[in-house]
Length: 223
Image (cartoon, rainbow, N blue to C red; front, side, top):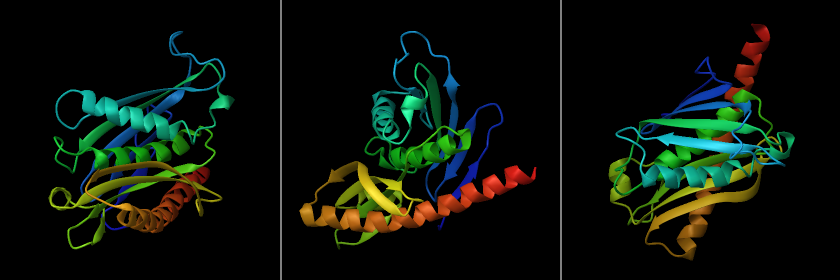
């Protein structure tokens, strides 16, 4: 994938990690767990998630809390939580490069965090029932659909969409839409086109992720 650079096992003091860089956005994700939670965090029948999103500039605000809430919703749907009752998984995201005007958008960071978290969870060996993979799509005023748009294109587009799909059967089959986060002016026809373009690009991206995972496994087995 053009402009994409992904490295798993990036950090040594955590159970799983990913350095995820697109042409415009960079995220470092770490996973620690399962570990013993504090009593207020404990869930009796499944794994509890603690998500922390740190912005590229300044301290976390309500913007990062919104990203955390959306990430929590997505990740809880792919983790086999019942295998880890009364346990906690801490997932931390450090935004290194936003790639978008932070006053107006958070979609690029959100989608980068989803992809980074999926790979970091795999790296940590936490059981997943599926993969969550996402893309950002901008719809311009001349009805072009641009995947991973620049900040300038986003600001001058009719609408911007963040799409995350749940993939099963070797990441070859789409099971569900986990997230569709849209901003701007659009109709039903444009939204269906976003889903079509998004599915095509997400399936391509998932194949790239599988190659990264397979390469990591082979490297681990030979060490």
